Amino acid sequence: MNASSAEGPASQQSMRRANLALVLGAVSRLNATSRAQVAEATGLTRAAAGSLVNELLEAGLLRERGAALEGRVGRPSTVVSLNDRGPAGLGLDVGVEHAGACVVDLSGAVRIHIRRPAGHRGQPPEKVAGNLAEVAEAALVRADELGLRIVGGGVAVPGLIGTSDTVVHAPNLGWHDVDLIGQLRALLPDRLRALPLAVENEANLGALAELWRGSGSRDFVHVSAEAGIGAAVVVDGQLLRGKRGFAGELGHMPVYPDGRPCACGSHGCLEQYAGEEAVLRECGLTGEAMEADRVALLAGSARAGREAVLGALDQAGRALGIALAGAVNLVDPETVVLAGAYAELADWLLPGMQTELGARVRIRPWQPEGLVVSELRREGPMIGAATAVVQRVIADPSVLRG
Image 1 (cartoon, one colour):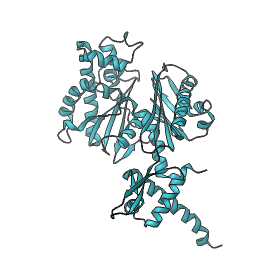
Image 2 (cartoon, helix red, strand yellow):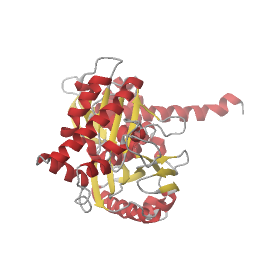
Image 3 (cartoon, helix red, strand yellow):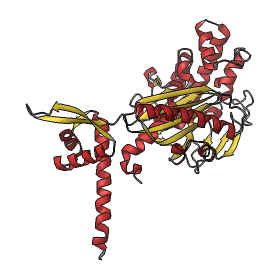
Image 4 (cartoon, one colour):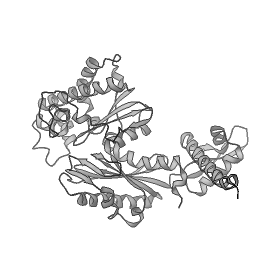
């Protein structure tokens, strides 16, 4: 057999794989659409587009939604869309005070959402893995009821993630070099254990969720908070990871170089002025926050007009503005996205942030509309983890084979 004939079938298989992804991506963008519209959007012939659509229907990635008139009067056409009762992604979230799970279908809709209180600070990784396995199993049961088939999962963690899926350092959990995926996999139900699973920094996943589901910007700085402060930078639709994958450590950017000592060994870090613990300490709510949803407590106290809380949130907003002005001057994003717990406290953080950004951004005049509040709020990382699975399927439907 000569080289050209040996390479022929592989080349054809690769072409069909690429065309399947092309068609599935077109249906994802167009939503409910006809085969003819798919052909037009992809540049394929009607026959080729129709054949590929049929293959995706058989694989359970698309579904037919009845007939519609297609351009020419009286000529019916079957409408197809992404299957909302087919493959789906599982997102898991490790919080310092909670464990969460969600399931996202192929269309990107969040079909299942679970959030349970769980004190994870200082707990051994196997205990946290057990809590994650419980919410994952609960999500699986609900997915079965909805006719959804989980095909992969992701775990959002508040820490630095190494290239081998190791949690290198998660300071608010007290972890170093933890194989969370390995521990979790051993505890999952059989149907989830064999699936592709990945761990990712929560700020990165929150930024990706914003990219896929948010305002439409492809160039932004994303800043969020739970127990710590996380940030991510998206440039031209791509996450900026840095050499070792650790980009985005905004919480330890010094905003007052001679300021408060930080656990990292430096002084005046942003986390010491805009982190959850710092804000609670500043306004005297540390005791009240022991058994409460801390973000809800701060928001409720601010609405009630408690001066100490309003002052602490204003100080946090100004510190955030100082840090983010440096980021804006460095990377020139289209927008700055306020997410996570910060999104729920935006009413009290934004004035100070806008003041500092306006005073310190020097590469161009700062426009207040450049600072936007994410609608995903604290659910962004978990939704991002699940949506990443869906995005991989749409980019390459062949990942479901075998």
